[in-house]
Image (cartoon, one colour):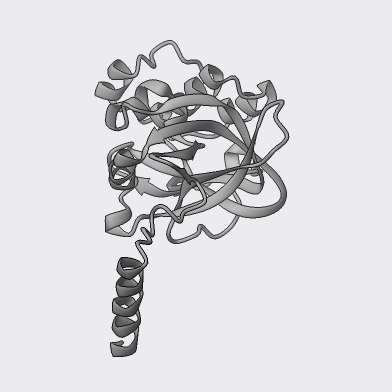
Length: 212
């Protein structure tokens, strides 16, 4: 433990001497902004702008070799929330945003990084009709879920892996708003939910008309 602390102190000292800011070294950071890939509730503009008003939508983006999964029941959402899991050949669609770097702590807080629930990961995504890969930040659940509910028949999805109706509506509305492929929207719409609703979010995010 003492050696670990010593290494951290040394690295901090080196960064100060050479003027290296660890955040500025992240691949998703460019100047005073960073790229963020939202695959869950932050696909929806009205949702992400609650805590990150500087977020600018760049387009629908594809992350290869990861699948969306649901895990870790949330009191806020009244059901399981989304994460991604490495999965060869899988495709995850989402929304690519450009956010002011000063807002990075806000999105870290939204994802409960300080509580150890989610952790940031740097990945490379592709915008629709744009070949070059773009480095982006996303967040995954710290404890990777066991099993794969992505391809399960609705009747077999365990209750603790089911998102709430409200949460799934946010994902569907965000996917449609972001222009994600129709087949991906169809998959989201058909995923098993627990029929729980969060009334104030239904009203705030105008979800009443989102069909599931």
